[in-house]
Image (cartoon, rainbow, N blue to C red; front, side, top):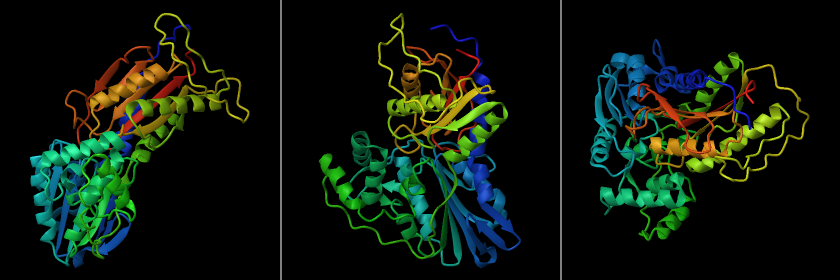
Length: 439
């Protein structure tokens, strides 16, 4: 197969990444979700007279907690009387409220125990004339999920690690919110029965009820039988504790203020303006790095054949070939043009979290995706990127923005560019480019 002509990937990749994190930025999203006009406060989709509240307090939890808290402080000013931030990264210097560092994304650490105790102390001290803002982003589970009665922190972490390895990240959260203590599975809403409670959430594509184990959202009926089966499979079949009572009537449903769709839309719109045909593979791809890579590359090829009718290339048996059979991608059933569109090429998008603990993707998962995607990509003109949106949180050796150059049969070359940590966390943005000019 002939070599592709030179192509500079950094510009479109950096454009995609920068616009994605701006489109899904937690600071901007909370500022848009909190609006104060004279005496009327809009919180998500609710409008309340601010004068009815004696105190307005907040708790901000997760990777983007500092950005969310700063937005609340700037929108409400002196009306904010209490606040607590618990996150993996340092808060902005301008933030005037207590901040606790919880660097480990897994529940069970001593830092998480201390943060949860402070969290519960704050919310239980509020009365019926008060407002509590719960600002949630991925990574909050480390703080909210306390160990069951009789478990220590390390044992609790080991159990959740086994569940995650055997059944997946969402089943791990199921177990945490059903048998955990503290603030998961609606327990924060139970502890804060007196004040009005409104939750603003940064979602990663799995749903607002999963972030932080659903501190104000009770686990759904019928889930406990599945949790019992998961525990039995790990030889931890202790009796399930009684389900917590439902939260009080002043605890309102969470409002998602930003998520993967916002990141993808921002990138797609700008790249479309620069001459790229923008298409969506999926908002969120579940599974391991290898599974996400296979689905993403298959989606890219399917979209590619829908844009231009052209046979899918196959690997040669020459030097560097892996000998792996290329999966067959069906041609579209509708008529497609035989010539390339008048554009720079195709840009496709998805997000993924690689089936890791909430907010805990590391550079190694991103690089595993890039290796698998490199081996699955059959078009030498294609460039693929995996761009982390959580900042330099869980992996000091892997910065937020990681992207891949030309498809290779071996390891994928990567380059990073630094970003401000703690701005948001909507997962890892997957981007693929197929420029028409290259063959």
